[in-house]
Image (cartoon, rainbow, N blue to C red):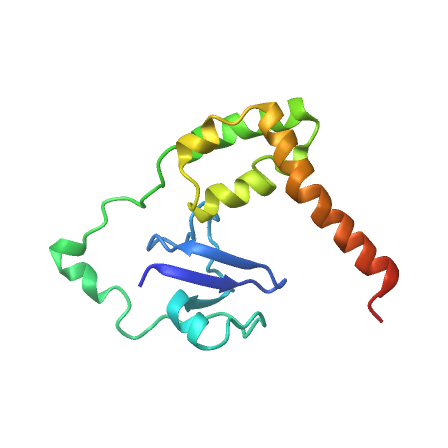
Length: 153
C-alpha cells in the first residue's frame, strides 16, 4: 500500500514509496496538494495523468500502525541514495553531460531502483558518454525531428 503515484497541481507525475510522513522517496511533502493513487489502483484506472485536486485521508488511514508488526520508527530510505547523488554529478560534469546527472537520466534510474546501485556507482565518464551517445542523443534527435516535421498545433 506504500507504492504510490502522485499527480501534482503542475502536472508532474511522482512515483515511489510513501513513507507515512508526507514524502514519496526523496520528494519531501510530495503528497501535499497532490492527487495520490496506490500504484495498482492508478494502473487499473488507466494511469491517469490529470490533476484531480488534493487527495483526502482515508477514514482508516494509520490504523495499521496499531499493529506492532507494522511500526515505522523513522521513514525508510533506499540504500546508497545520497552516495549515488554525490557520484553522479561530478561524473556527468566531467563528461560534459549534466543531463545525465542526479537531476537527469541517472537520477531517474536511481529513483526507479531498477538498476543495481553498484552498477550505477561503477560508471565512469566514458560510460556516461557512451550511454548518452547510444541512447539519449538519438532520442533527442527523434524529438527534434518530430517537432520540426509535425509541430503541435
